[in-house]
Image 1 (cartoon, helix red, strand yellow):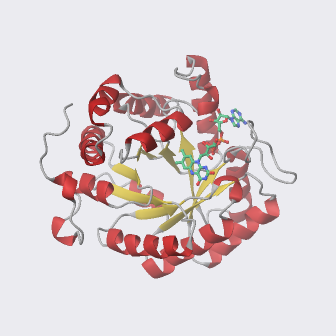
Image 2 (image 1 turned 90 degrees about the vertical axis):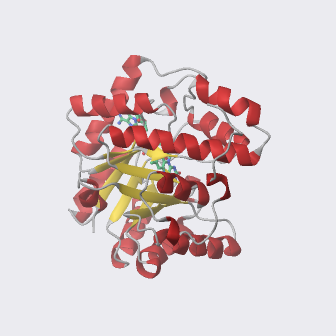
Length: 320
Ligand code: FAD
């Protein structure tokens, strides 16, 4: 089943979990145990990332097959152009097609390790738009194609500690529209913490004539340093009230996670209240915060949670 179909159903909330390929065999075993515990809650789909520079190609293919056919959850595989000549891209697509997957997230990918700028590999593609065109040309309507969207514009055009110039933001949007016009039928956004800005982005997309579902990517804050690293890498805007709430609790891991669940819940509530009925959770291969948020929203049943969620209990450790 193509995931954009379920995302179009306005009458129910659709939620999904993203995972990445672990580095060790034990890590893979742990991930599958975790996934089993998480799919009990009926996510509408799950996805698995494609390691930077294509570093996890074989593992991503193997994991996506197991997810689709053994965990039995609708699976979307990420695929990037970095270091991928077209033959390798087609190998990957043929493999997932023969494994019964129908969903792919088509990305350009980040520059190869040690380089600042994205370089097109010989016989490969320069951007996600080219990949989308290729998939449609070669595989027709077989795949549901998702693309990445950037509510604060792609980091390439965002200055350090600043926001993207308006012109760059709008040309980014116009480019996103081209990806959709070329055949993408769903957008998942980069992580963000400024919910109002996300809602504005959706509005801007609609104004431009982008009609496909736009799914917000939500990354619960689990750990202060990890949060700073990730938002620094993605040049994500951090609203001052979030920094102010984190500053006094940054050395208390439990308090940070509590706050992360609280913040994630509030963000999702606002998104749902604005009529967007899809939530994509960047789990970072951890289950508790994602499940706690969904439980707070009443989207999953507590009785199906097999492990305690300690930081869900009321707490006064954080202030917002
Ligand atoms: P593109 O859509 O090709 O473009 C990126 C930006 O470049 C555009 O926004 C635009 O400003 C500019 N641009 C490119 N081509 C043109 C053009 N022809 N005309 C005008 N402007 C252009 N990375 C991984 O390595 N593995 C993953 O699994 C992965 N998953 C991701 C999932 C999501 C939901 C998101 C948001 C990102 C993910 N990334 C992943 C990161 C992603 O690979 C990087 O952000 C990368 O730098 C850009 O990929 P893209 O597909 O957005 O690129």
